Amino acid sequence: MAPKSLSPLALKLMKGVIALELVGVFGAYGLFQMMNNSPDFRNSVNRRFPSILEVYYKSNELAGVHGIRERDLEAWSAKQE
Image (cartoon, rainbow, N blue to C red; front, side, top):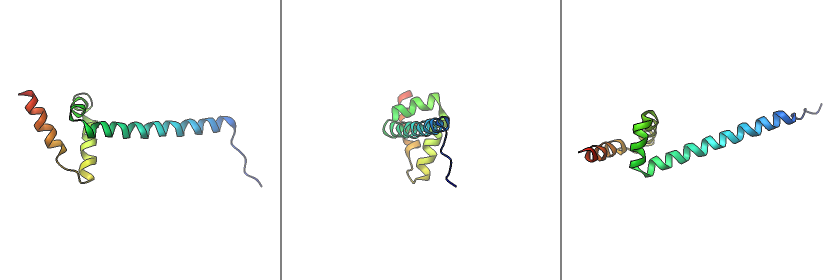
């Protein structure tokens, strides 16, 4: 018995879900790259979405990259003075 092919609606939905997942992955990668390269961008993320910045710090610490949080706090406190 041959397997049934997907209906056109199911095929469109599957393609849409895959496209949304790809957009999400590339968006997360782009956000990570922007936060990785710009302390000023991290400062604006800290003011608007501190939980996202916390995930960034934690992921870097788990990867073995330490000191980013401390450097940011020093730079931000120097700007305020």
